[in-house]
Length: 313
Ligand code: GDP
Ligand code: MG
Image (cartoon, rainbow, N blue to C red; front, side, top):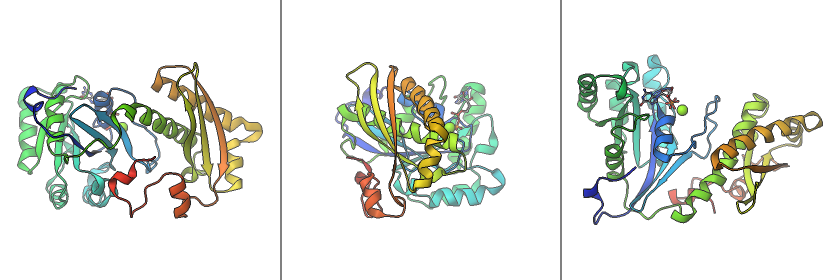
């Protein structure tokens, strides 16, 4: 993605968190993948699985956007509750800009007056991205944009698949970000996010394979990541809260951990586009979710920390 030429001179460097909100299937993941250019957005059928929500990082010499997932506006008939939940969610509080993605072919995905009022009550800037405009005629697209603008939002027509409207979209987003240096060092950001996503892939795979058994007790950390060799060597520790959970992750005769390893390795290989040797270890970190010291040890930012503190060191 490139910034329009007029923005390239004397503009301060900007960096911030952008929450992508919107109902399922409106195209949030597609948009993220097109913007960030890699398969980086983690999809999991279970709700609330993304504890650390940075799902993509877009770095240029002028700005850095940290995309975070926000809960969707799910059932139209529960729209108000959903909107309130969205408005109350930490993702919105942490965001510098909220992008509400709607589907040009699905009027139900557009915010109504109530949602409009609820969201506008927050001080965070909200941008509506009318996606999939490649599927409607120009007149329809213009009408939809007009309707969303009438609710008081900056609105842009985009297509996440063809890329139409995306550079204008980006410049509108970037204009609303705070002036700030990059939070992830530019030269490190690729490696940082590869490590980050490797952890997320293993955790996602645990959730897929372990179902209801211990969904939220699992967190993963890269212990070693050696890119300088073929295959790339990755060692990841899966942390659980109790000895019994360790048994579940390992499975009978090691069958479960083997399957977790295989699936996770394939995902990491697809990300780095190289062969990967993945070694997994399971460790018990007694009650890690409830203990601040343990959470810090795992690199979680705790509420007393500032936004910048979310970055793991
Ligand atoms: P999410 O649930 O909001 O993350 O939506 P996805 O990104 O998974 O997209 C849902 C479906 O819409 C997929 O089949 C995408 O290929 C399709 N899609 C997303 N964006 C566009 C677009 O701009 N144009 C078209 N024609 N299809 C799109
Ligand atoms: Mg998605």
